[in-house]
Length: 91
Image 1 (cartoon, one colour):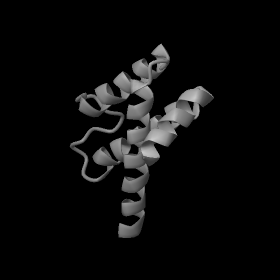
Image 2: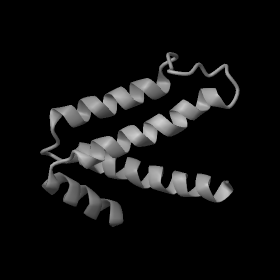
Image 3: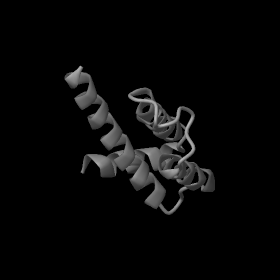
Image 4: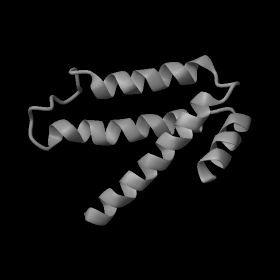
């Protein structure tokens, strides 16, 4: 299980970095900025799909939904922005 969590963290960190570079790109679309803002709002919002007071399951919705939302945004990037963000991420 620890290997899976480590792999999840590595993927999330890389995807979050790629999303950050895509947001800073001069041609970043408005929907990307709105989507990233909504993800940040969800992470810091006290309103969750599963309340955090429920042990284990309360945090699992954040652990599952946030990486899925980031990956969903990255898959919808225009090709030139995705290529530039991926190149910056690798540097």
